[in-house]
Amino acid sequence: MTTEEFSPVILDEASIDTLVSSFEHISHSDSQDNSFWYARELMSLLGYSKWENFQNVIEKAKQACVKSGHETNHHFPDVRKMVVLGSGSEREIEDIALSRYASYLIAQNGDPRKKSIAFAQTYFAIQTRRQEILDQETNELSPLSEDERRLMLRDEIKEHNKSLASAAKSAGVVTPFEYSVFQTHGYQGLYGGLNVPGIRRKKGLNKNKSILDFMGSTELAANLFRATQTEEKLRRDGVKGKTAANRVHKEVGAKVRQTIADIGGTMPENLPVAEDIKKVARRTKRNLSDK
Image 1 (cartoon, rainbow, N blue to C red):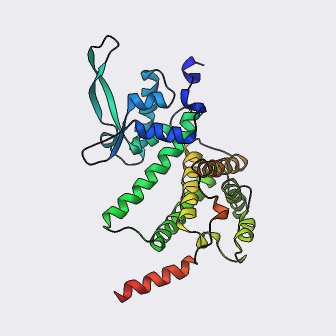
Image 2 (image 1 turned 90 degrees about the horizontal axis):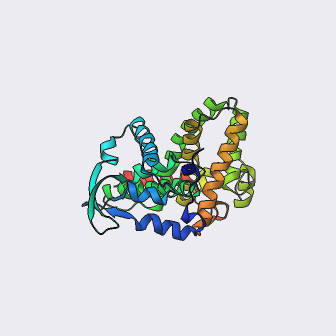
Image 3 (image 1 turned 135 degrees about the horizontal axis):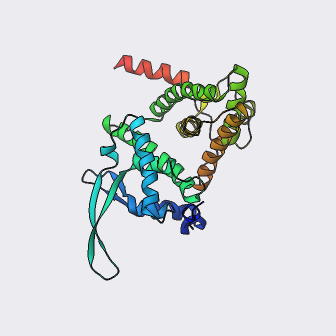
């Protein structure tokens, strides 16, 4: 193993607030106010000391970008900039202007043993999702209401759960019972050990009710993040075996929970119960028909 793999990361012992500030401090904005990061600046923050090693991570991220159907030129444009040398003179160097999505892909393909990489994976995933929601609200010219957020997120979870089930099946989770156990592990990770019946009891829900139908937008977003990140990790790491798949789902759920704790959020089991999403859907449909 090379010394690069275990190079010290100055920010490892810093607080989450400091880490967040560090990522945002080195961000830049283009003419349209879109955030981007210079690869050479992000490299140091992610614990890499050699540009050649970091370029290998960037190449993997570019391949993931292509597989996702995106243009690398839009997210990884090459740039040249002037830097000041120790002597005071300037020299032009090559760099890459990384979009938020590109930075997220780099974090996903970085060395997971680096604590800064583990943090960046969560940071950029959450920030990317926030930007997607913001962009959607901007395109619609008006902010989404809580009902609209819930309906949108609930529909997304339905679709992503299908993809998650497919990824779990490929890993070896075959029968309905095995998938139920797999899902339980994810909820236990996110809800501090509570399974679905435990969540229902905590929130005072009828045993025949779907807990997802009574979640507000914040809780739905946390569960959507859990589902999407679990699916991606199962496929990316080529996880095999139902035991390994269960462990991954629980670990991802726990990491999402830890992130909520780190930023001072409310634990999902303590969030208030929302109105039945089916009633919200019916009311929204009536309001649209009355217009």
